[in-house]
Image (cartoon, rainbow, N blue to C red; front, side, top):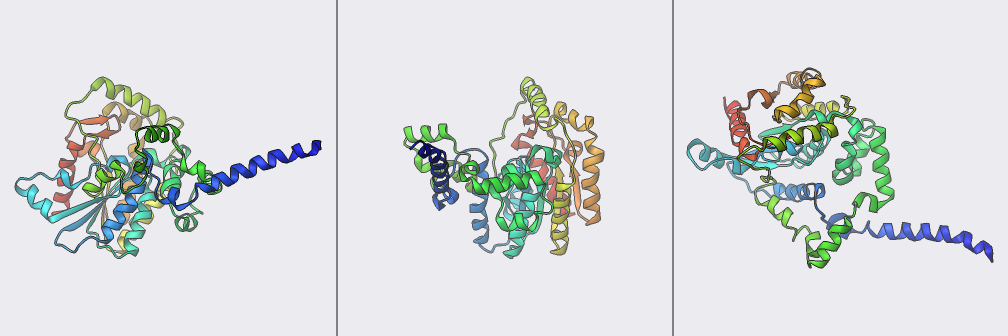
Length: 343
């Protein structure tokens, strides 16, 4: 009789595994929106469907890609006066940027757009040196966890670092791990009768992103909080530049993007967005301008594309936090890029 207790651990493991598989149902994999990063990655799938159904018009299509520093490339950045109004009627911007999105994520969407036959006139691709450090695991979390398909992973598994691949396969085994269930949010939504927020069709954050083709203008302020920005610079520098190492993985994905653009005769601008001066000291400390940006510029020149460092050519000095400028700055940047394009 005592031997029956040996079965209990096996029964417990089986029960946990069975319950975990419940979260692999379509309700959770397709229609379960929490907050944070998952909102953007879920919305971009919705935006892609919207792009596929985009009506033929005379507007030229601009695709914005990259990490959160590309959030504010938007149609609303055009004003309603003079030449700006004409440009608003001439250009249409769809924003496929994502939080902490590495170049592999942009390649993922570019491949799908080209395969679908979408006619793109110009691409704004924001690159950030922080995303080129494989030690931070940004390829797996959030992209491989929230956005990648099995087909994409299998196609590039020889490029993806082993640690990121291991994490990806663990997510395949343990669904709840990938879901990152926010229990506090679940309780809060239940108490406030907001469970429908898990459905993308009723999620307010998704609705806001869908209003103007994916742009996110929450990073808006008209006055700098210098004390907060200085504090942010130290905090974020400790996160992204702790044990910083420049790896080649995302250079490879960036080159694949450029190859694809050249092959399909697409124009692409590689952009390095401005950050708060104190945070920028990390770029100086780790020789980012020469080692990282120099590599980006060399790739751009190799494929006859353009690269712009807004830390040098941008005039706007408004910052939402140490790593992101205010959305109000993007009026200047969009018109600068269109001026360059129309020359």
